[in-house]
Image (cartoon, rainbow over all chains, first blue to last red; front, side, top):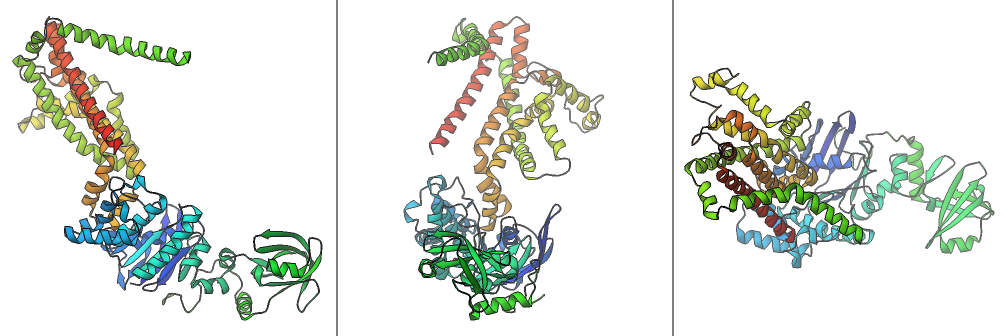
Length: 345
Length: 265
């Protein structure tokens, strides 16, 4: 089922949490709401769920206006940031809750819960209480509980936020696989761009209550709609006043076409990647990301004179053109990417 | 090592002299004429009736303060509105107000002859002061804060996530309350109900103003104990006092038993 958010605004007291946010989530997709903490992305998710009501604007699920439909009748599954397990119920009872309130038959409930516990790999944990589970297990229980009612839309608030790095990476991949298996329209909130890029089909970037851009991870990365998106999604540096990815810079010992001279200030090794900080002769600083192999070929160290330019490739051309055509105005609330922008203004 | 023992000795001595020995002496005094004498003293028609009045009033007042107490706790924990601090202050007031003031206030408001709404109630056949309704009102008044005070922190601690999760799963508001909120607050609520009951059973000051203290009619159990003592019936007084103490002890025991079961789960 598709989700359409139409120019929603929300104030908490005097603070404008959301300012005219609009976007569409295509049916069956896995979409990330990405942005810095406190930017309003969780509020968007809670408004889609019906846990908050927008001051103005509308929410459509599968073409139906659900703005004033209570959460319990929206056919959604919601996973809370801290999973909100029912502490007085065991895993089986947690997962069965939605089915019980829907008055399903006992056999049907037993069948469905068994199926879901298998899906989230918690078969052996049915009798455990939430306090006896690890963070990752609780997360999977919460997912099974939300999926039990066969929601048309699955909403996840910072699904991996409270887990340690290792479990997090594992669950990310697992969520992607699960989504491909269950094929329910899924929206998740995250502040981690790497997570969004790895898991999502579509990313909606929200900052300070405004939508910055909607698009596929590649689109957002390569054709950022604003300076903010560019710098938020990946490593970024400036050369001659333009934003570029440090891995899109060419660095040589001798001048080449269009290059700027400078002096290496510092070299940092981060495993396979080398980070070269350069003091350009125009007084600005930049940094270049190269592979270990490329660095060995460059054969340079701090204090050496080098020449830096932007690598010419179809991708960087596009980015540069986009940069020049549209002054990097971070406040642009309506990114004009024809592919993904909402149908209405 | 020695500090530990000194501290323990101090704690034991203090509580022993303050609470243990006086209570022990009353038990000793009640039972010294023999168990059957003590038993007879609290099974006179007047004593039984007084106990019945107290238990009936307690049952009604506990039920009222449980239902309204949970409701008020939800309002205080979950809703901030202009004037909510007034509600909070009013709920806490009985804790600091002397029961005698409670009794006088109720009398002034409900008295059939000169109360604010007493004469109107009286005209409709309802007598509050010097009657059973007055005893129930005084019981509810003095014990109002306990359920609220025990439940509010639990509600704040559990937050609203579980309730909202239940809502997204399709549960209607009452189902959310019954299946999620109530089980989550049950131990706080149980403790609040125990404190409410104990407070009501022991109430004397407010009762002495509003009940009328008519033997066999509106005399409460604490009044029976007090009257026995002033009327030179020490057996009745001490046996009654011990009975009151026993009831409290049973209530406490029940609670700690259920708490340890909860902890084991």
